[in-house]
Amino acid sequence: MEIGQGCEALDLKTQVRILAGLCFNIFHYKIGVLNMKKSTKNQIIVLVIVLIFFSSSFAYIATSFGAGAKDNQFVPLESFIIKGDINQATESAYLENGFTFLKFHYSNDSLIQFAENLPEQLSTNTGQMQLILQEINDSETYFIISNLNGERRIDNPTQNDVLNALCEMLLAFPPECSILNIAGNSSV
Image (tube, rainbow, N blue to C red; front, side):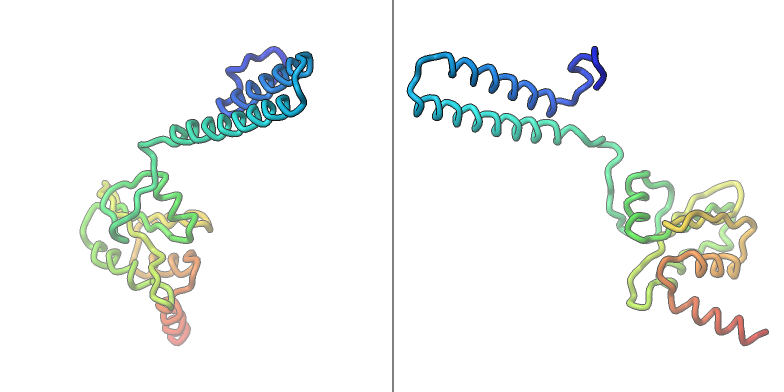
């Protein structure tokens, strides 16, 4: 906060804590001026400290409920094949947890069955799914692979192009890719 800025530059939690601290300091100095027994002063100070703790806790709870945007929340997927778009928060959460998105933009139905088999076909060696297929009807056919390693676009795709790119980009190397490598090396 710069000098000359008002309290509106601070969040609510900080404002409450500053106000509580000021009240404590003012009250503490007033008690020192008054002629009270030491035990009474200590009881009042303890009461003020307890009130400060409760008020700061209340301020924290009050500000944490309204912090998130409701329309951009994480939504668990019901399937590893999605038709259409998903929200950015859900996609980001899955990407951060090691999943790979295969965004299939298609103008004809020639590769749909192939693409829909990929999430299960390219699961890890323990059987865990790692690929999420997103089917998007479009005017042209292409694939976009995205995960923590980056993003890759495949224009005019063939099945081999897509499989090879996925084998290069997937975070966990699936058994299917080993079979493709063996088959590819034996034909040379």
